[in-house]
Structure formats: structure tokens, C-alpha cells
Amino acid sequence: MKTIAVIISDFFEDSEYTEPAEAFRKAGHKLVHIGLKENQTVKGKNKATPVRVELAVKDVSADDYDALLIPGGYSPDKLRADEDAVRFVKAFFESGKPVFAICHAPQLLITADILRGRKVTGWKSIIQDIKNAGATFVDAAVVEDGNLVSSRYPGDLPEFIRVSLNKL
Amino acid sequence: MKTIAVIISDFFEDSEYTEPAEAFRKAGHKLVHIGLKENQTVKGKNKATPVRVELAVKDVSADDYDALLIPGGYSPDKLRADEDAVRFVKAFFESGKPVFAICHAPQLLITADILRGRKVTGWKSIIQDIKNAGATFVDAAVVEDGNLVSSRYPGDLPEFIRVSLNKL
View 1: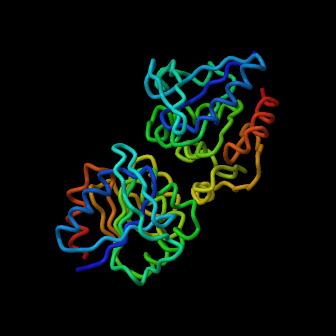
View 2: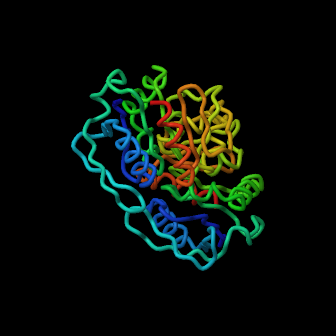
View 3: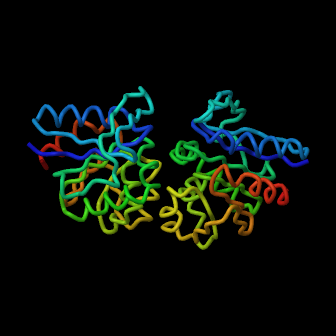
């Protein structure tokens, strides 16, 4: 059993949280929800799926988790505006442990300045940002480069989940 | 009287549309609302302010307008995923006519690849994207560089509107 940190804020893309979360739990792993404020409920942008944020990102350490899931939607835009969230994601990425990023999630990796030289995919609106950050954008359902697993949008979830589970 | 194109989609930051629009109309200017589909009503992300999109961006020409307003919020993220919107904004910017960009609006200018060497400001979540696009980020209420007027967030609206009106 692994412990997976989920970093999440309001307006996340519902299925990009619910489907990986369900698959990880079914495989016996544990999820810890991390956000901007502890004991806060955040909601998805389409179905208003509620997610209880257990811990504030300012209070957590990358050492305590085995992998990191970053759902997409507009949640990454909110998180990247927070210095503690950026610092946590940067530390996590640099630890070499698996990072699962889908849709707009690379925005958070861009602000953490960790994409240079990496192969990555993401939602089409951020392709130019990914390229400008020094990464190679790959238009594929799932892209694996070292510890980073990335996908483009909800239609890629089966592949995203399959490859992510293999990393755990 | 000038004709100002407003390029807008769902989840725009309400006041970043309503306040400049009111000021431009009071000064005697005309607004034309351009979006992804004609005769579609889009809504703001906070107050669900309705805006009637009159024309689809695929059917318009930069030649027909004297200035361009790009409200922020998540509207620019939706617009930059559309090739016609990116092409229109690029053509408009390169015409040298005034472009008024606030909050997340520089995202659309990044995808149009027109920020290199420019001084610009915007919402804090996109600072790294602005820098990676080859622009100089300036943390000020309003930044004027050639035909481009930019501001950070709704609190900057008085300065944004004042400088924009001077450009018309």
C-alpha cells in the first residue's frame, strides 16, 4: 500500500480526480488530500464534486508521500498562485517519486520550473506554455518521462490510470 | 466614436468586462462582442453576468475594429484553445491598434506568440508563463508598452480603464 498525495483546489475537472482516486483505492492505496486550507471542502467545476482537503500544503512534507496526483481543470491555476503549493510540488518532483499530471496540471509544474528538457503532454490551451517552459510537448494519450506521467484530458483517463498504477 | 471588439467566452471575470464596457460606452464608443459561436450567451464566473456574443471569431476581421478588449478569468483559457481566436488576436495585435488585456488575458497573447520583448503585467498565476514567453513581467497596476495596455486584477480597473480610454 502506497500513500498518494492529491493536490487540489476549487474548479478541478471532476473526473480527473474521481476516476484515478477510485482506481488507486481499489488497488489498495491510500489518498491524502492537500490544498490551500485544511478542513476545507473544494468542488469540481462540472459536477461540483465535493472533496475534503485534509491538510494545508504549507504544513506538509514531500517525504510523507509516495506519489503525487495533480488533477486538471482550473485547480492548478489556483494552486500555482500559492508559493507553498509551488514549493511542495517542486520538492516532490525533485525527490524522484512519481508525479501524475493531467490536463492543466503542467501549469503547476511550469511555475515550479521543473519541466525543462522533459517530455510532457497536457490540455491544448497550455501547449505554448509547455513549449516555452523548455519541455517537449507530445500529443499522446499518456506520456511517461522518468517519474512524470502526463495525459491530455478526461478521454485519456484509462491510459493515465493504467500507467500511473504501474508506477506505484 | 470608436468600435471596440471584446473577445470573450464563459467563466470571464465579471468586473473585468462590465466595468471597462460601461466606461467605454459612457465615453461614446461602441462594443462588438466576439466569441467562439455567434448568438451565444456566455457567463461570468462569479456573478454569472450574461454577455451576448454577436459574432463568431472565425467570421470577423481585425480591420473592422479600432481596439480590442480581452477580459480575464478563465475566458482566455477557452479562447486560446481555438485556432481562429488565436489568429484574430495575433492579426489584431500586429495591426498596431490598441489591445487592452487584464488578468489572465496575456494567456491568449502567449498562444499568439506576440509577447516576445514586450513589457506586460497580468494575474500572478501566469507570471512564469509571461516570462517564459520572452516578455518582461512588470508588477504594476497598469503597464503600457506600445499598443498594449495590461493590468493585473480587478483592483487595477480604475487605472486600466483610464489608460485604455486615453488610447482610444
